[in-house]
Amino acid sequence: MSADPAPIDRTTVLDVEGMTCGHCVSAVTNELEQVQHVSNISVILRNGGLSEVTVVSDSVLDQDALRAAVDEAGYTVKAIHVDN
Image (cartoon, rainbow, N blue to C red; front, side, top):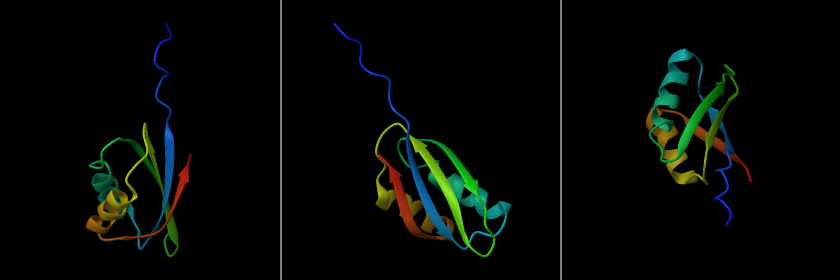
């Protein structure tokens, strides 16, 4: 009898427009932490460009929920890249 395999971390990268400072990072992080299955968030802030928000989870994330969370923080998701 084999044990269940350990969950595999999945990475989803969001290209987010409009983030310019630490407060922006905090606002987006706080909203994304509320999305089910999110386990870790990191941000590469690019003032004047698209910031890269990396979301780690143990299952596939609802892209609409991710977009809604970023929108709630006051920013716009321009693209989503999923590491299958």
